[in-house]
Amino acid sequence: MSTSVTRAAGNEPAQSTAPASAARALDRLRGAWPARAALAVLAGVLLYLSFPPRPLWWLAPFALALLAGCLRGRRARAGFGLGFVFGLGYLLPLLVWTSEGVGPVPWIALVTLEALIFGLTGLGIALVGTLPGRALWASALWIAGEALRARAPFGGFSWGKLAFGQADGFFLPLAALGGTPLLSFAVALCGFGLYEAWRTARSQPRRTTAALAALTVALPVGAALAARPLVSDAAEDGTAVAAVIQGNVPRAGFDFNAQRRAVLDNHANRTLQLADDVKAGRARQPDFVVWPENSSDIDPFTQQDAHDVIDRAVKRIGVPVAIGSVLEPPTGPLRNTMILWDPVKGPTATYDKRKIQPFGERMPMRSFVRIFSKDVDRVRRDFGPGKEPGVFDMAGTRAGMVTCYEAAFDDAVRSTVQAGAQVIAVPSNNATFGRSQMTYQQLAMDRIRAVEHSRTVLVPVTSGVSAVIRPDGTVVQQTKMFTADALVAEIPLRSTQTPATRLGPLPEYALLLVAAGGLGWVATRRVRARRAA
Image 1 (spheres, rainbow, N blue to C red):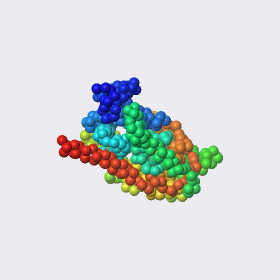
Image 2: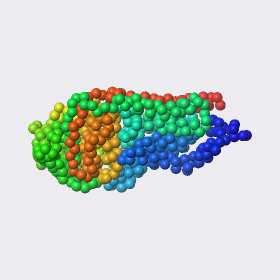
Image 3: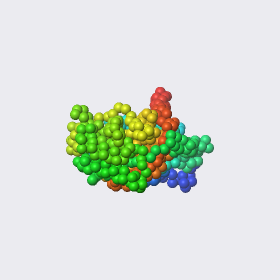
Image 4: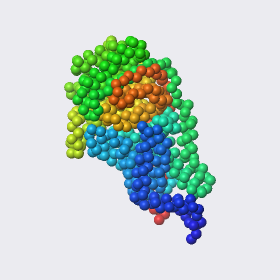
């Protein structure tokens, strides 16, 4: 039979031209399992490289296009395996910071668990690969995988969402329209659409097919352009002068907790220095100040010396200060708490962190985990979660507290803004993770949240990169790692809610329905095929 009438695996006419021959050779290469697995790992590494601190956000669509090529024409079981090795290639380098101070076992365990969810995503994408408009179904299934990771197991782990690598990207305005789910979906649709456009273009398909393939790339690009007016840093409610304190820690790693008094003194002393700078005219007088998470791991409600150190620093600066502390009630779990400290009244209000980090602040399956790592005993007493969002009235500014790990969760940030926050503070502590990329990944996440909810985001960190982020995602000031510093900036106050804030989880739910519709279509076709047989 001549090549002019031979049919390819996708039922398109195969051409006898040299480019088509090269394409068929590539198809044969991808047909071998080791080659596909290697390409899937490469796709995962490319996605990792698209994340901060590298400004290579544009690699993400190409990474997903390569993954789509690996999954094309595969059965469900192969799709699971390819999705799993893709997850390993992506998460092993992305989350290597979780091994700081505790060795490789927790890191590998976390990555393996998360990669299994990527395996399920790959399985679903392989299943819908025979449907028309496969890029749409695949992108929705990608969001389903992210939704699952954000909720399970142990309350979920949202780190590494596709959206969180797009702080410098073209698609960023979509965060204000539909939150991180829509932003992730746009990047995924562009990536899977790129593969479909390439595949159809090399096969010289009908015009309609080519137009539909191109539309999957053009649609997210057009939507991002249309969403740009939603991004604004205008001062709707006036401005305020905010100060962010980074006191630094004596040394990195888990042992910083053994130097709790030194960490507290560092932050108090840096605040006293700021007060001296204000008096000498070297710095502006702030309206309020925010310290990092764990800046006082000594409970100031039970330890008088800690109370006195904090109170002296707050009185000298003369404005309300949000203090990150660990409270130790006589019974029950510990509390990771932000305390609003007034220069006249002392401590007046508190916010308890609601999203408690599993295997960091609480230890599920303690006896089982101890078999693999004795570091489990570093968490001697679990932390308990708070229940209500925390919005402090700081000299007339309503500052919402979103403590560290919580910034990875859509509902934690959104509920704080809905509670009336005009500015978001993300007090964090990443001294545990040394000079790793973790602090840059978290900073990018905070930039996404600034655009998503159109709020200034203040990021005080004990030793990492503290920053002031405007509502358009621009970092206007930041510190160096392991350097005591104070950032003072005039920031816009805003109260308008973006569509993303108002809609909340609805865009994600809609995309989950699309994913379910794709899988349902596959199931229906299989049932009909069996009946016909």
